[in-house]
Every structure is written in structure tokens, then in C-alpha cells.
Length: 286
Image (cartoon, rainbow, N blue to C red; front, side):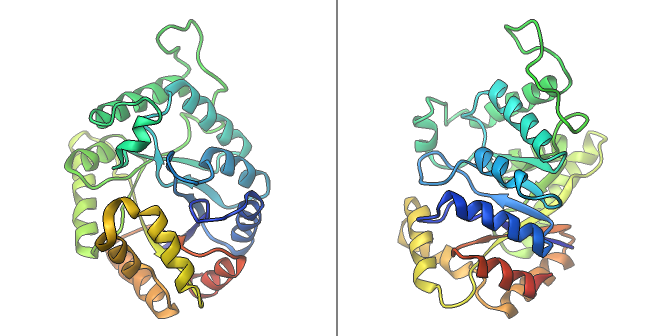
């Protein structure tokens, strides 16, 4: 099973240069993929821009938005951005997308929160058409550039609702689970696999995720979680804080459990800054 690491682009106070240094170190230490977390109404660094910088300083590690809040984005612009990243990274970019759960991200973009699932379906149609070199409605030529990867970057979909699991099975190259109990994650992937089988296509890859923070960083972790998850209230914040992997033993056990249920790759997102997080996690997990 492969192990990836997230960019710290959603942590408080992170500078742009840190993202570049983090990406280079993750590439050097042998992680399989560099992930990201993205929102609009938060001080996150935009994942498209961050990955463009990361692609320029890496040569092996793959890049995966996990998951990008996609429905508020314009299809033509996202198709162009993703194809451009695919070129810069020479085929190392995976486009991970989801619908999110916070209305304010949609409000600021003038997008429809209530209809976000249907919008994502239409967005997937538009990406597929664009990367297959068909013009979008209103244009007499395709939006370019043509992607570096034949057919476009691999599509990764998240989500655990019945509709999201069915969509992943029918349309994604990979499904990535959110946090949860191993038996629940495994059951959800079986629904993804069954949806793929029902339409006669190969099952998407089974990816998983988790949070980690190593060393004497508890105060920093609490600040980061409280800032990002304040919408959920104090009990939700405490729940998220409780699943952060903080010791080598917890990380090793978590990875082993996910491997046992069939995950092909696990991306661990940092809840603390500093390149020591990259090095220490690599020493434990790789």
C-alpha cells in the first residue's frame, strides 16, 4: 500500500514558500502523492496555484486535490487549469473533487448549494467533453490545451452519501474515503465497486485518508482544527481532534488496518507545520 502526504495549505499562518519546500521534501522522501484540502471561505492557499508551484519543484511524486470543492467552479476554466497542471506535472496530476457541506463556500461564488450534486454531474460531463476535444456549448472550438494525459487527468471522487458512492463507481478513476471506522469505509467501497460493476466498468481505485501531527504540537493542532471546523461546533471539533494520529504506533496501526481492508493508498494530512512533520512521518510510514 502506498502512503501519501497532504500539503499544509489549510493550516493557520502557512506561507507560500513553505508549500514549495514541503512539496520538494515530500518528493525527496518518497511519498506516493501530495494531497490538498481546499475551500473558498477560509485562509487556505488555492490548490491549483499551489500544485503548479509544487509541480515545478518535484519530479516523481503525484499531485492530487483531495478533494477540491468543484461545483462552484466554471467548467471551462477548471478544464483549462487541470489540463495545464497535467502538462506542468507531466501526467502526475489527479483531479480529486467533491461537493462540500458548507453553504458559505457556495454563497460567495454565486453558486447553488442545494443542487450541488447535479452540478458536479454536469461538470464531469463538461470535463470529459473538453478533454476529448469537443467544444462546449457556445463555442466553435474546444477549450485547450489538450491534456498531457490521454483523456485527461485521472478523476478522484470523494463522499459517502448513496449518490456520491454511486457517482464514484460510475464515473471515477478512484474513490477516496473520508475519516471513519474501517468497517464503514470498507462497506462504502463495496457500494462503489458494485456501482461500477453495474455499468460494466472497472472498479475505481480504493484510496483512504487521515490526519496526523507528530511531536509536541498539541496546541497548534487544536488551533488548526478549531479554525477549520468551527462550523461544526465544539463537539465536532473534539471529535476531529480525537482522530488525529499523534504517535508512531497510532500511525502504523492505522495504516495496517486500512491495508487490511484493501486500501491501495492512504494520504495523511498534516495538522501541524514544519518540515520535521514530513521527515518524521516518512521515517515511520515509508
